[in-house]
Image (cartoon, rainbow, N blue to C red):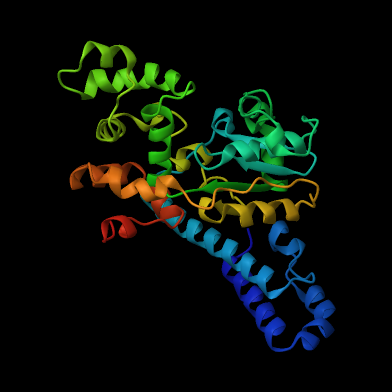
Length: 335
């Protein structure tokens, strides 16, 4: 993989050239292109020397910063543990678009429904180019989109080396609260499965003197009970909606080209589609504000400090690898 630091230096130089002397930049564009290191990552190099504006160059710097932060965190993890060997089933969350040579590791509660819809369109599995016309239930069906785990080991190795790979991440506690609200707290039709399978288990094992009705329905799990359950249970048994991204997408074993964030979802999604030359799909915009974000303090204030820190430890890799912090919520960083 190309040295990210070198890529950042190149982008900074280009940005300075664009800002201080556009004429000089344009006049020397071909020379720069010929002298550039052809070992650069394909995605970054693809339009690196195109007619990019200052804003586009700054955008590329953001993605390189995210990659650099991730790689630094992964090096620390590797120094403290043995390397993980991935089997085919561990690629189950990676969706494949052969037409555009694109891989997407979907993460529940990080706006994955719309990206699944877009992948159906990209794969030619939908009659419309409007993602919102595709029912969510169809987008989430396990057979709607090809998965990397369906390919042979030899094919997987080739695809991982030649396809553009991306994922979207989110503040782990925001994602966790969104999952709790949607799957255990609310009384949606889709929540009943989770309340019956997981809610009843939580009530039975983590509530003293539970009523017969609660044991029967599992639809009144408190956030504190949910947090206690997550701390006590093995992560390997977690449902995908609250399983750490580290265990879903294996970012220290798979070299993702683009790390999108929930906080910049619209911009990142548009950037990805632009990179693969797709202009006929209008990606659905994310909500302007998040109710989950505003409710973080309300729900986490019900937890003792010890529980918050234990919960942080469950998601510590996600916090550290993707640049999230407890400081905004607690006023200080985790040790």
